[in-house]
Length: 76
Image (cartoon, rainbow, N blue to C red; front, side, top):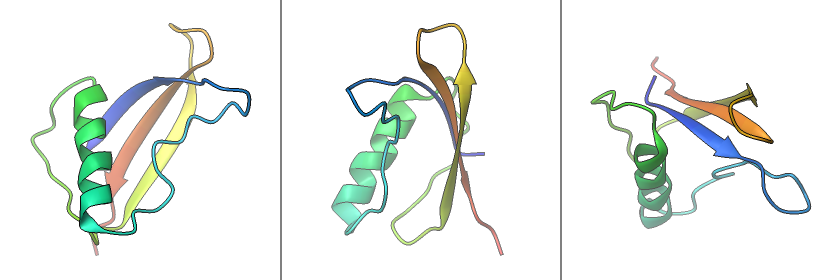
């Protein structure tokens, strides 16, 4: 587990995604910094451009239209 984030769905499309796919290291770093900023606690773990990440999202009921997003890294 790298980050766990509480997000609120916003906008007309109901999109709660943080990132679809980073095209370069700078875009990935911006995504990762945002994950760390929103994370409920610091895991002390890091990710880098090229890592295979999976995000899982489920309902979170302490916020209207809330989502709990978990980000994990694939380890071979």
